[in-house]
Length: 119
Image 1 (cartoon, rainbow, N blue to C red):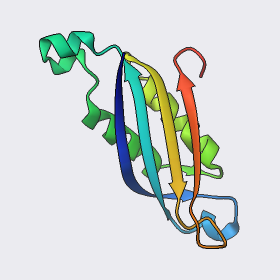
Image 2 (image 1 turned 180 degrees about the vertical axis):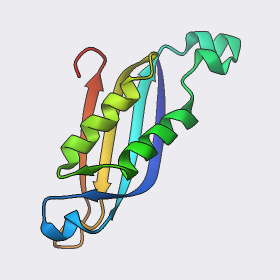
Image 3 (image 1 turned 120 degrees about the vertical axis):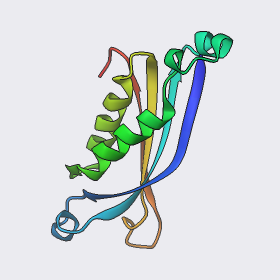
Image 4 (image 1 turned 60 degrees about the vertical axis):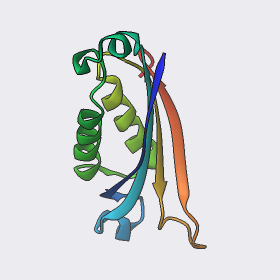
């Protein structure tokens, strides 16, 4: 099983439950990890037998930038389902970090894992 990691994707999105969060876009940092059987791609060097990482990035970017979720959990679930829509992918892990969320200057992150057939 192969594992792909795409880290530190920066997006701006409407996210949060407070009134001011619903009117102003906020920075989010997204880390993705997903598994797929990479043996055919590794032995053939054929992109058609792989998962196109660029396509994953573009679809996640479009989803996040056009979203308007209240909860990081809901956005992470939508991203996980989007990654699992690639037929080769069997597991996806999504971490979303919201740098401006903490009242004390820290960053808040949410991570969850999604498995084919369970979402």
